[in-house]
Length: 294
Length: 307
Image (cartoon, rainbow over all chains, first blue to last red; front, side, top):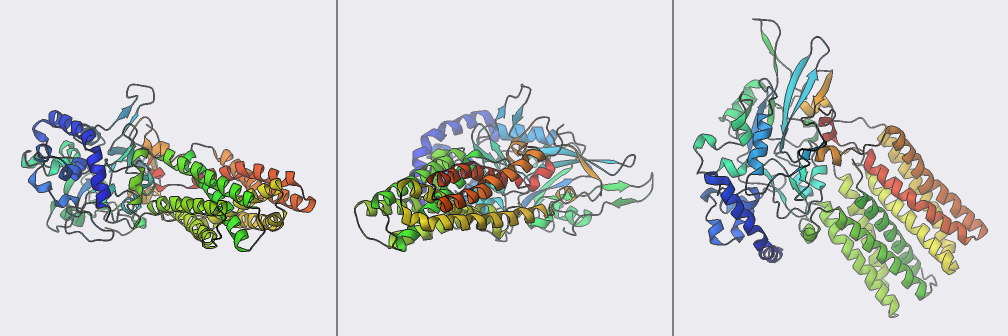
């Protein structure tokens, strides 16, 4: 239904997007051609020269969106190890660098050198202090889209620009369909989405979907930019539906937990709790997780 | 939440237009002797208000040129449903206006207008009431308040116009109805205020981070200046301002208009009905501003300390 409308619109906007793709092709070097979240979505509508750049893996079934409540066979996610995050913000800057340079267009900054700089980021590292002085603990807390398995942001989108991929469970925004109504951001309890003030469309973490499937990259580089950048290995990436994957194992063995389990969004990203050393050489205890959810 | 002026204007103006149309439709269905000129004028006013509302809703969008896409996801999105129902309502009102103008008797048009107006209130309120983690909104009273406040403002508007144009038959019914509905809306809005005052947020900093320490404070939100998250979800007004706006809308939206309506009915005073309308307009805006400002989004837990 409404396919004719989509086709009509696709043909109408096509000329405007072609230069953006060309530019991205030049900027990305050999890492390009992967097609971003957005580019991949619209590639089927484009003429062969552009379509040829996409990797074979992305063709066709990336258009398939998961229905609400559907159980997926594969769910890519990040596991954040709070025990080793040192709060260096390398994941923030590498995320910004990768995602501002891709074919989906820049993540705009406003007044970057002014007194009140602001800009679009997919990933932030926050810092919390637990306990009372002198027994305090500093906890660095990276925060990005959790790629919920029941994402509340997706069904509220009036245009269908927000969707969850059936193929790997990544929650994406099609920037070409977003009308910038901000309703999805209201519907996300985690504040994971940020409106790009320049493009006036909603943006969010793509799990570097334009990188993890890029067969032109060496295999060890097919990971989200934040994971590659982390100097302490606090960010793990993999399929949480595969019980034998690294991420599933650490979630099981180290008590991985979800954020805000009370809203039953079933986040795919999990956090590993701090292991607190009681005394030198003594036993360590794992900080109890909250809410009994894993 | 930071109240968006466009959404405040849209929900209040469209709500009042719906109330006006429902009032006129009920009067027409009850066989009230309305001058065709008055009915046509009132429907024009309603349609103009709906156009203003539509314009305001477009102003809310970052990419208004793609607004047509918003009709696509009606299966899952209340916003999409509203986007379909609003133009439908405008079309029904326009058709009715045409029928009145050309002297065609079509009782199904006011009936359809009532049904679509009710549907539009439902869709508009569900946009907010369906967000389960915004606890101030996720309650049936949100639906009741959107409908009753819209109806109250529509009845006050209809009464003021009837008083100005000498439509005594309509005024004799719409005046008492406006008074009763305004009191009812006052009651239900007060109920929702009382409920919201006793709400315990289900999300805490502990559930938001999973760090189970009883004493847990944020030291840095991860940036030195603001972001979309700090602009969109914080209204920046002090508690004192919030309290005054609450008092202000209770007086301006409900108490004063009710008193003025009483005066108008008792003294047959056109001035009182017009004053009731003029007093209620800022009250409606304040009420809707407060509705948004009062909502505490759980994401705010992550954005407490700049540094």
